[in-house]
Structure formats: C-alpha cells, structure tokens
Length: 530
Image (cartoon, rainbow, N blue to C red; front, side, top):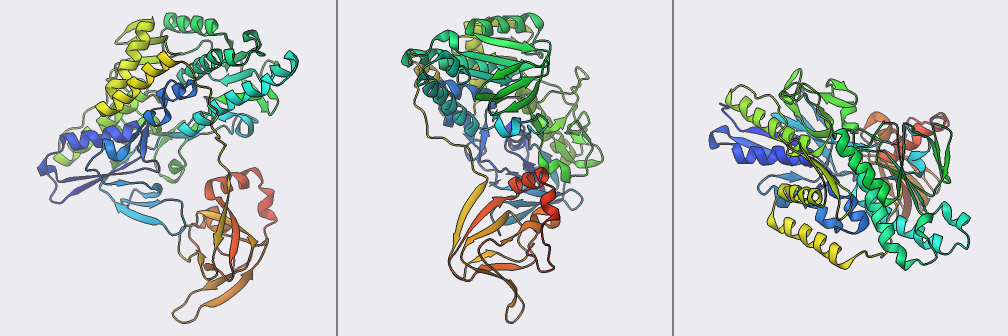
C-alpha cells in the first residue's frame, strides 16, 4: 500500500479516458489514497457513433456530446492540450494554445487515451478537397454543404449542369461510411419535395472502398442485408477500388473511372495523435503496443486505452479494433490494473465485454450483431438506440436523445441551412501600444506577420530592456519556436497600435511540410524571435 497519495493523470476525454476515470472513482478505497485528474483539449465526450444522425437532423448536435464536468463530478478537469509528457520524470506540460498559458502536472500513473486524429495526407487531393467527418463541426458543415448543393442544383437549367452538384462520393465502407451515406440519402430524399426541379433519379450517392464488402467486422450475411438496404436508398457501391486522386471537380478511381462531384466525404483516413511522436514507447501501425493488461511494455506506470492502444483481447488473441465498445472496456481494464498496482495485487488481462456492434442506417433501419445474434430492420434500429441510451451517463441525456428521435419521426426533415463555414487557418489579432505580443520563455503557439503598426524585439534584463530590432509592416516572427525550439528567446511588444495575422503551430507545421523550399528562403538571424 502506498505511504503517500498516488496521482493518476488521464490524458484524453474520449470514451476510454472517461471510463477509466469513472472506474477509478467507483472502485478506489480510502486506503488507496488515489488522486485522479483528467486533461483534454475538449471539454466533452463526443459520441461519434451518433454524429451521422446530426447530418439528417434526427439528433441535435449538442445531444451527442456529454460535458466532462457533468459526467465526472469530483475529478479535477484541465481543459488543456498535453503538449509534452516526461515519462521518466512523471510530469506533463499542458497548454491551451494561447501564448503564455501553460501549466505542469505531476503524476505517478498515466493513462494515454488521446484517440486518433484525421489524416488525409496519404490520399492525393483529399486533404484539400474532401470533407472530413471527425468532429461535430465537420457534420454541421457537411449538412449545410449538402443542402447548399440542393439549392445550387435547383437553379441550374439542365440535368447535365446539375449532375456534379447532385453526386456525393463517400470514401470508406465501414460503420461511419455506411451510416453517413444512409443519413445523406435520407436527408436528400426527404427534402426533394421542396425542390421540384430536381428529380430523384438525378441524385447519386457512391461509396468507394478497396475492400471486398461493406462492414467487414459484421458477419457476411448481416453485411449483405445492410448492402441491400443501401441499394434501396439509391446508394451505389464501388468496392475493390480506391480513390487515386481528388480535385475540386471530383475524384479519379484506381481503375481509371472519373466521377464528377462537388462533394467528397472522407470517413476513412485517420492517423496517430501527434503526442505519440514525442513519446519513447513501442508502437505498431501508429498505435501504442500494449501488453494484455493495457500496460505499455518497459513502463510499469504507463497505460493506454482506446484508439491509441493496440491491445490483444485475451479471449481471442487478436488485437482489438479502434471501436467504441473496445475503448470503453479498455478504459475500465487500465483503471482496474492501476488499482491492482497501487494495492500490490496481480493485474487482470484485458477481455472485451461489449454487447456487440450496430450500424444505424436511417430512422427505421439498422443492422446489429448483439451477443452473437444478428438482426436487422426496425427491431435492430430500436435495439441500437437502446444500446446507445444504456451508455449515456444520465437520464437527462437519455431523455434528450429519445425526444430528438421521436420528434424527427413525427415532424420530418428540416432543411434549414446554417451559416457554417470551415475554420480559417489564419487569425487576425490587434494589440495596443505597449502590449506584449510574445514573452521570452513562453511556449510558442503562433507564427506572426505584422500587417499594420510597429513592434520591437527586446531582451529583458535586470535593468533596462535591450532593443534587438524593430519590426514593421510585412515583417514576421515566431517561426523558430514552432520548428522545434519550443520556447521564445526574446520578447516582442507593440510600439504603436499593431495588427497581425497569426497561424497556429499545427497549420504552420502543415504549411512548412508542404513547402520545404520556404525554409531555405528564410533569412535567419541570430536575434530571430524564437
């Protein structure tokens, strides 16, 4: 038994992180002297399996998100990104992405549950032109975009002109792709009565995937029923081919076929969280290689769970896929084995305990594989909704979801187009004369270009500040801290009222990766602000 308080830090507020925290709270004893904290850049647990229903309007966006402070009462929550993790020193550096806003947390045990991130870089043109489906904002934008395509097509005089606006390409054939294609079809089908110039036969929804069939984790018979329902909705399947390239005018497939489309929806294409690249842990295919206890080999105090973890299921011997039910049970396993370590007990091997898998493909159809039993149709849709309700943390959240489903069934589709636009990588900022723009020693989070006004670079000492140089319109600063040095080596403050454009470190990194020649043209100086 520990002779002092043991601190557990959970990194990530997704399904695995939340379940780990809940399990620790429920099973810790006073004698364990266990302190639990959670750090996440998002303050909600996002239910990805429900997000496609936001597209069709069956669910309200706020109802597929659960506030972490609501579901984890009593757990210190830090709404910060974990920027650095010192596994030897057992210390984490957290930042909000704002200059000068950072904090440190010490820990005895850490659970890595950061999930995956969208990564379309390996698909030519998709990063630039495909619509991602990773966040709730992505689905809100996608819904607005689909309705916008209907509005645009309704104004075109000929079917030939309308074709590219009414063709929707979904990349993938897993749960996310099948559900997104189904909800897109339902949204369009239920809206066409409002667009009399568009005929149902003009709309094409196409799923493209290199696999031999859809929903490969379900048995073949059940996947066949799902495929039959997609055909009934008018969804075409192009299997055994990949998207070779993507442009603003459409996609080219690996078999040479070209599909004219203004809408390419990416449900495939994820990559490891950038934090993994900074950690000295074993990895396999972009996931942390774990033992059967959800523990990272070589690090007795480090555990991983969820999409980020490659954990073998003791009952099957196979590595668990990155799916929600596996994330839930892995979070619980990591928590149980942290408690076992604190108490000096033997760890327990991971076994998947999920009820099954379900794909909700519209308001009245689903396919489900629950406890080895296959079902489809309305019964499966009801079972799938009940399954999601069982995972919800409160009756309030369950009631809101049930009301949404009932209202959608009774009242039909709303084609309101929200004024949602994609996030800009460039941000404008204004500083008054005398304001500090960046401070020496702070973590670098932005690259700056001055558009108006004047600033000075100074080195602060015990006495007067030493002026290093003046900056004016068109001058830039902050690049070296983003390229690896981490912290600023000087202070920049506004001499007059000053406006700048700022690019955050993630977007700046992407820009530099795409334009390596830019680095060779940067006139480096010894007094550059880092």
